[in-house]
Amino acid sequence: MLETRKALLALILIWATSFAGPALAQSANLDPAGSGVILGAVNWIQGTLLGAVATTVAVIAVAGCGFMMLTGRMNWRHGGMVILGCFILFGSAAIVGGIRSAAQGF
Image (cartoon, rainbow, N blue to C red; front, side, top):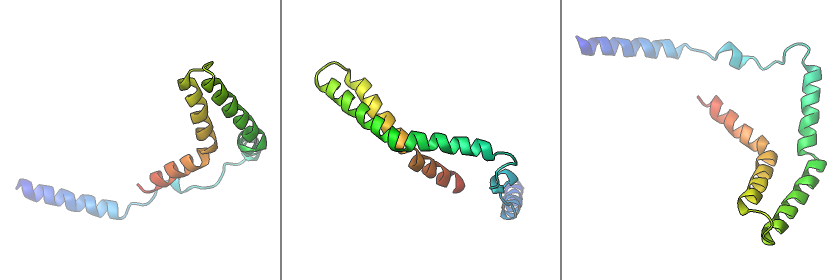
């Protein structure tokens, strides 16, 4: 009797999940109305954080931290955090792409 109920429940679950579609929040790829200004501002911030100015500042920061670590003026842990921050900042597009592809797989 218990095995029959388990088999019936499994059959119902398989049937119910076979007709399931994506949630409405996941299938809507359109931006909300009036978000053009916000998107423009966010794109400007992204361009500033990942553009030529940010690359120049990151190179100077890594060079300065490296020089200070080599001369003993800076703790290696703090210098490593600066370098790790640069990797995260400039690798953010790849990190987000990996998270999005992993989330869409489920």
